[in-house]
Structures are given as structure tokens and as C-alpha cells.
Length: 500
Image 1 (cartoon, rainbow, N blue to C red):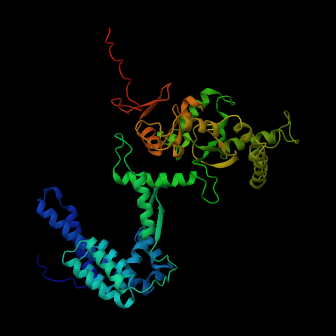
Image 2: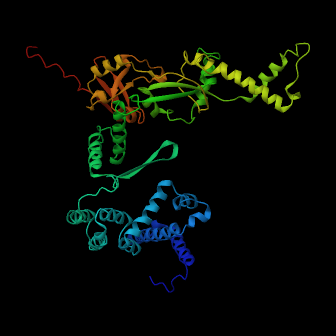
Image 3: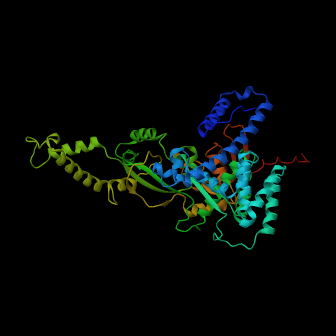
């Protein structure tokens, strides 16, 4: 392609970039032949590399000149988050590129020319950063030339390691041994997270061992791909560590649940003031409410959890107005024949002080160890809950599965009770075959040990059903009912009697 005239300004250049991308976004990529699609992907990769270099150069100049201060921001990173609508991690990454390419001009030039991808550029800069300052520029040139000649990333890593062996002096450890390690956990939508970082060789080896040990397929029913298994392996490793009680300042409980329920919902429980019909309505109203313990999968976490009930409430303005009117009607200045002053007749400041006093007394009646919330909670326990409001009462942490039952369950099953799984029972969860939420009792005949995958995913997320037979064997039924897995083979038929 021939460009007849180069842009005369940054504004024109940016307009040309946007116009080119708008054209590509307007194309129906499916109509392009495969060769044209391949050309687009290669050229877009080069454009991404050039964009990384240009963005880093402009950002470095913007930060050095204090441009962010003109918009009232303390740092360029804060300005990026505000003005370009990116996350904290993305802003930190952009500032990292600005610093990295300022220290590696050869890599910056290679990116600008589209000769190397941003991911390879990051890797090369990380390797040569370990070399003495006097050797860094030459090392960048050597590695870039090798990459341009067709070397693979693994070949570049081996070459960088050889450079480090020959050129690097004794470790000065200027950063206290922490300069090459980092880990960032960004919490995103609804408590989900994004994990990024740079690991030392020792941490990499340790994590690899954990993922290889806990991330294997659990059986023919396990349809997770590798990345999903790695995620679940990391979660299981953390859960096992928490369960050992080795973390400082923790109770060492495998799962701790704060069960929030409103005072109205507690009052409407079976045995409460309003009876079974009101509780059924409250359950129906609570469906779909936000909360990390709602849904089928959440039953797995609550199945073997230590639960702390917390009663919450909110101010009902209509009830407060009715209470105020009743108080005024029974005021010493009023009677049945001579009622007290109406609420509407009082000055607003006087009415506000009166309602504040009534709320103080109401809070004393509702909350505290001797309050209504504690009285109801001690005898009635909800299994569902709506959104959280003002805490009125919290109970002590309780064991749902008593230790003696846990020992009996793990003695009966030395490993996960799901057919074909050999995870030792000491690292398993205790699963209620009939869920507690459905009235399942915490009794030996209703409990089996299950590993994290078969408990939280296969049972509570995918919908497999598990059956415990009287002889202690188990059978698992797939969600569609077409497959049944047995923990033992079928009994062998009796051999024919030769004499018969």
C-alpha cells in the first residue's frame, strides 16, 4: 500500500488511525479469504506493538511534564484511570511500559517498527534487567537480532540465561530479594478476581507442583479443561491450607459462613409469630436476592460449613409513624376521651426528637443478648436470606457437623466417596446426601466425604446425584440420568454346580 501524504500533526495521525480501525471494524471478516484474514491478523499484531511503543512514549512525556496535574490528579496513573476509563491494574501496567521502554530504547524501537510483540518485548526486558547496567543495551540488541532471525522464545530464554551466567556478578540483592517477584489480585464484578504477577523460580516450581498434583482430571465425568482445572486446584490448595489451621489469626475452619436474615424473615419462620404460610412467602421473595450462598452451587459451601447467623433489619417509616401516633394518643396529656396531640400538629424538630427517642428504645428491645432478635434466633434458624441491612444480632460460630460424626464418616470412607476418586478423606468435605436446605439430617447415614471437585462442582454445580448403599458403597447418577458410576463392580454370578 502506498501512502501519498504523511499526516502533518498528531491530530491527523490519530484521525487516520481511527479511520483505519473503523474501516476494519465495518468489514464482514467472514467474507474475506483466509489469506486476507491472515494478513489482517499479522498487520494488526504489528499495529499493537507500535501502539504499545507510542503509548509508552507519550505517557512518559506526559508524566515527566506533570500534565496530569492540570486536571487535578496527583499521578499519571490516577489520571489514566479517570480519563481513559481503565482499571487500576491496567493503569499500573501502562506506567510499567513507560518506564520499561525508557530503559530499553532498542526494544522500544523494535516495537515501534512492529518487529517484536509486546509479550516478547516484556520477556526480553525482564531478562536483561537482571544484567549489569553496562551490559543491558548490548544484550537487548543481541536478543532482538536473534528474534528477528527466527529464534523461538525458549531459545531466547536460553541465550539470556547464558548471558546472565557470563556477565552478571554476584547478586547484590538491592531490592532485598523482592525485585523480581510480584502478585496482584484485583477483585472485579460480584467478588470475582483477576490474578496477575511475576513469580520467582522457587515460587514457580512450588505452584507447578500444586497444580500438577491437584489439577488432574478426576475421572470420566470431569469435563473441565486445563485452565479450569488449574483454577480449581489453586482454590483447593488454599482451602486445604486454611483447613489445617496454620494461617495466623484464623480459626482454622474449612468454611465459615455468615448467614444474614432479616428480622421480619426470622419472625415469619415456622414456629414464629406468623406461621408456615408467611415463611413460604418469605422464601419465595428471597429467591434471586444477591448473596454468595444462593443457588445450587452454594449448597456445597454451606454443606460442611460453620455458620454464624446474623439478624439484620431496616427502618420501616410507616411503622415508626404508627408507633409515634400511638405514643401520642397514650400521652399523659391525652386519653380515650381527650386524645393527645396529633403528630402533624407538632413542630418538626419536636417530632424528630420524639421519633429518635422511640427508635432508641426500639433498638434496645430488638438488639443485644436479651433482645427480640437474639431470642428468636436462638430457637429459629433460617436457611435462606435476603440482602443485608443493619445488623441487630449475631450468634456464636457453631459446628454443623460435630467432630465425632466427621471422624465416623472418614473412618467409614478412607477416600472420596464418589466412585473412582481416591482423594484421601482427611482432605475431603463432609457432604449431606440430602441437603440441609431440604431438611437433610446431620446423621451418619446422610453424610459422606467428597473431594472439592466432586462436592462443589460435580454434585452442587453440575447436578450429579450420589447414593449411599447400606453396605457403604456408593453410586453416582449423571444429571441426564444416562450414566451410573459404581464404587465397586457388580457381584459375580455364582458358578454353576458341576454336580447339578
